[in-house]
Image (cartoon, rainbow, N blue to C red; front, top):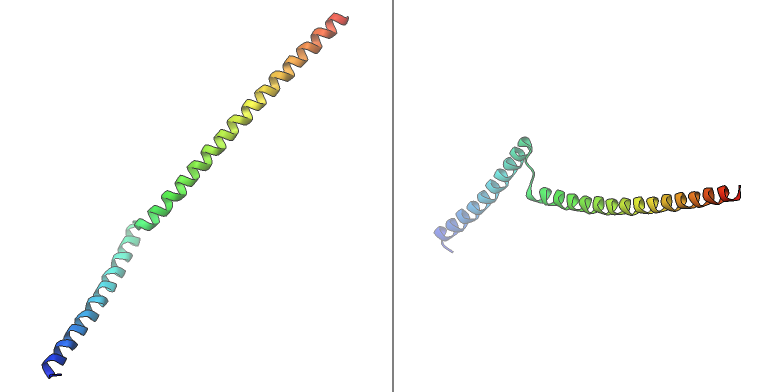
Length: 95
């Protein structure tokens, strides 16, 4: 291999190493800036979106459960009231 070819390969390798170093450096500085500004990464936002969706589903389920419990409570109260009226009516008739 000639000195010129070896020099060219060395320059190409150095350029590649410098590019990678520059990319890491810019990435690190960008990350610091995002943190300083309080900006979130897309992955973080996506994760939070998933958590919010899960919480919405959970709240919807709890609301549905609460609605069913309220309905059951009302029915129980109505039955109790009806039984009380019957018992009261029968006690008047017996007197």
